Image (cartoon, rainbow, N blue to C red; front, side):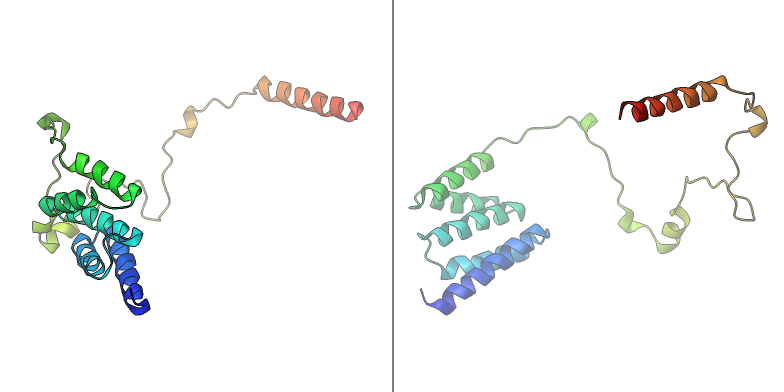
Length: 171
């Protein structure tokens, strides 16, 4: 393979991986398809490109294409590519489990809300406890707080000072 062709393959391969990691699966498929068309499919790089292409196909909802690429990887000269292709094919062909409706949370579609509704609902349910001067009102009634002398503080101070004196004496 020519050096410039190899650079194009590597550039498309990296761009495909980056697009995939950003969640742009269609763009990832496009880049990886370009790379797979230019690379020797039996090379190590070709196996890597095909593996990423299968993953991108699956993420883009093209399960048939993903399975076809995995089956192609099953006869790849690289042991690692064969193993990963077989593992991915096993996952793709696994039966889909049905989840009970009670396990699912319904998320409302907020895209259909008008702009005025969004402004109205922004911050709905948030209680503000501030006065007109911008100060936060105390949540605890300070008149109900017990302010009697607490002997615990004196005991803690005596124990702490004895401990410090003990350390000084030992050193």
